Structures are given as structure tokens and as C-alpha cells.
Figure 1: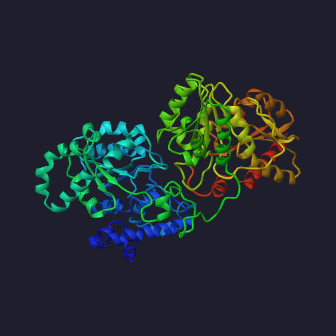
Figure 2: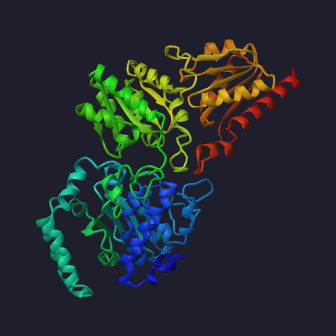
Length: 621
């Protein structure tokens, strides 16, 4: 096995060139087998095997720097840098991260997890290199899907001024998570299909292999050659040297292009054509499904564990379709996440009212504001961690104008295996700071349905946040109508009052059961609204409770608990207030249950803290 010879950084350079295709196949087999057990980002990594091999054979890591945009396509990079043994615990608690992490290896120079930032980071490293008088190579690898993000163009505009080497690799597979859309996708498609240019260029390079001087003599006619065969030449017109398109699965040719690119004393882009899911038929046919795959059967690609209950995303999908049928003003917006957020059915049923704007959350929010200003009722479905990118647009373009945009915030709370960059634990805090924003969180699947229907009728911005995965089906007998700013009492007793929001209501039921077994009376309120808060009910209920506990799957700093504490402090409450939530820190990868246990947010840990707090209050009284 050639892969047995790869145990540390640089070992791949010892492999004979003729054996590289066999090594690439071994790496694909390794990934397919390992991820069938652990799950992970399969399709994107199968597409970048040869590209990664070429970079590692040409570059000198860790001296040279590779910045992976988004970062989920770095698995081959991890294999080549001595981490293949860690794939048995990929994305598991305490195990190997699914993204680049500086704390894991000195060959990971920049932590990434979101999109469109690699060129900016790379440009910064180039400037740091030059200012320090060093001579390493910087390579930013960005996908065509990430080029739909405006930040990439801001960086390209800045990079055009460079008079020093900076390599940008455009990994073009016509995909982000879902199929890439928009003008850039069409532009790159024209380049991809310029067969005359692609084939002729490959022939020329093959015949001139090793004859650097000859290649240099024809370089001055290259721009006119490309202008003839390739429409637009956007990157050259920006001032960035363009090399390509290059077959992203021809490792030998990729090595040649990288060596050529290192000679250019300015920003240079290598346009690489790859196939997402390369080498594994199920992933080639269904790249979106295998973007972030759950464990699967290798022979068929079918998920190993079939979900039997509805997820929150399924509930959202059904309700959106029903609202679309009843109200012709309801529109749906996604930032390249139609499948993940549950909008695929809405897209099929109402294509004229469905908008995939690509990986561009800032644009998505202002676009939604424009729709709302024009009389429509837009619903922007977005993962919590990605909505952070549009903070300014939510304030300036939506809240300031009091526009009725609905934010359906998916993957809120602890999402698990993707780790720090993807935990949705900040939305309650940053949204609460925005004047005019209404914020809700459902306790179960029926409440999500009711809240969505309520939200599209409001004349103000509304955010509804809900977790990933299985929709809670408990508390079926509690379904009071949703009223603006009104909480829902579940159990009303004395002594301890638990005020829980959203997904924490389920945990609060378990906590209450533990406390009751200790002989302590316990009330439970489903807060429903973070903003406006049901202050009237909280103040009234506080009179009969010596301890008030808040529960939220959000950071405590600026979150729901702080709002409750401020309300009760202002009302002169004299008992104890215990805020339970996520501390002021980033949370690593692992299953939600493991992470809750680590953070002390599992039912047993929370019950222990509440009992301790109650006893201390009794001693004080």
C-alpha cells in the first residue's frame, strides 16, 4: 500500500510520479471507507484529491501556506500531514476536526469554516510575508460556490494591486453545497465549455514540458490567445494573471501549473476543473447528499441509519408549502442551502417565489428587505452560524425600516460534529440587541408550525430559531395560540420556577422530574418569546418562587437569561436567579449530548445546580 508510506508531512514527495494515480485511488478508498462509519464531508474531498497531492508535492509545508476556503475539503491534506490515524474519530468529541485547525497541525495555517474568506486571509499573509522579509508561498483554495460571496470580490479587487507572488486556486466543480447559481456560475461554465481552448492548451503544455524558456517566449501572446477562445476574461481584466482551465484530476499537469504560478510576481489564479464526488458513483450522482454525509452503506450510498421521525426541517418545509399555497405574497430565500433548510419542495412548487442567491448572506438579507418593501412576505431560511455574516444588513436594511422579513434560523444551538465554526449559539444575543426585532423559539414541532404562520402575519422583522434534527413531539396537550410577547405556562406550582426557551423546554421537563423526586415543587414556563419578553407574567410568577432558573441553548452573554434577570432585578425580585446556558467560549465538535455534558447542560447537571441553589436560598431565608 502506497498510503502506508505516508506518515508525516513531506512523505508524499518521496512517491514516484508514476505511482501518484494509484495513491490517489488509495486515498479515495480510504475516505469512502472511513466516512461510511463516521460521516463527514465526502463529495468535496473526493473532488480535491489530485489537487491536494499536487500542492503537497510542489510546496514546502509547513513553511509554505495553504488556506482552504470553508475548509471542509481538507481531508486529503490531513492524510498527507500525519493525521490519517485520526480518521477513526473524525468529527467525534476529542477527535480529529473536520476543518483546518491550527491547534491540530502546524500545516494548518488558518482556521476556516465559513465561506469566501480565503483570498482575504491569503492576501493578509502575503503582506505579512513581505513585511517580514520572508519568502514562503501562499496559496488560497476557493471553490466556485464561494465566489458567489461578495467578500471574495473585495479581496480580488485588492489583490490586483500586488507586485509579489500570491496564488489563488479556483476549484471549479459547478457546485457549492447545492448546484452553483448566478452570473459567476454561468461565466465559469463558458470557460469550462471552451473545449478548443482547453484541449489546445493541454497539447501545447504536453509538448513543451520542461522547456521553460520556450514557454516564457510565448507568454506575451497568451492573453490574446485567451481573449479569443475564452469569453470575458474577468480575472485578467481585474489585473490577476489567469492560468487554466486545468484538469483538476491530472496531478502531473497540476504540478506543472503550480510551478509556473510560483514564478509570477503578482496575484495569479489557477482555474481547476474538478468533479465533486469523483470516484464514488453515489457521490458523483448525488453530490449534495454527500456534501455532509451521515454514515452510509458503501455499496449503495444509502444512509446506514434511517430517521423514523420528522426533523424540524421537515416541519418547516411542509408549513412553507402550505403558506405558499394560501398566500401568494409568501416568498422563500436561501443562500445555497435549499436542501439543507428544507426549501426544496417550495422551490419545486413555487419556482417564481423561490430565490437561491448563492453563498451571500449579506445580499440575501437586503434582497429580502427589498422584497418586503415591495409588498411581499419573504422568509429567509438560514443556518444560525451563517446569519452572523449579515449582522449589519439585518440592523440597517431590515430593522431600521421595520420591514416584515421572517428569519427562519435553522441549526440553532449546539449542532455537534462541525464544531466551533458551525455552532449556532450566538443568535439570541446579537438579535436581541436590534430594535424592533421579534424573536421566538418553539418548544416542539407543532409550535414551530404555529410560529411560522404567526410570523408571516406580523408587520415587523421576526426571527424564529430552531435546532437541527429530530423535532420534539412531547407536550402535545399544550398548544395555546401564539400571541405576541406571551409566554405559555406548562406547570404552575411554587418554590422553583424554570423559564425555558425553545429546545431547552424538552430538557426542562426532564430537569423538573428530577427536582420533583427530591421533594421540591417546580413550575415550568415555555417562554416562547425572547423579545418582547413576557415581563408581566414573569413578575407576577416571581412572587411565589424563591428561585428562578432560565435555560437557553445560547451563550449567556447578552442572551435570554440576562434579559430575564434584568426584568426581575428592575422589579425588585429578592430571590435567587440562576442562568443556565453556554459560557462565554467557543464550543468544540462532538455530539450534542457529549457537548451538553461537558458544558453542564445535561438534565442531571442542571438539576444538581438548581437543587444546590434552592438549598442555599433556604439557608439564607
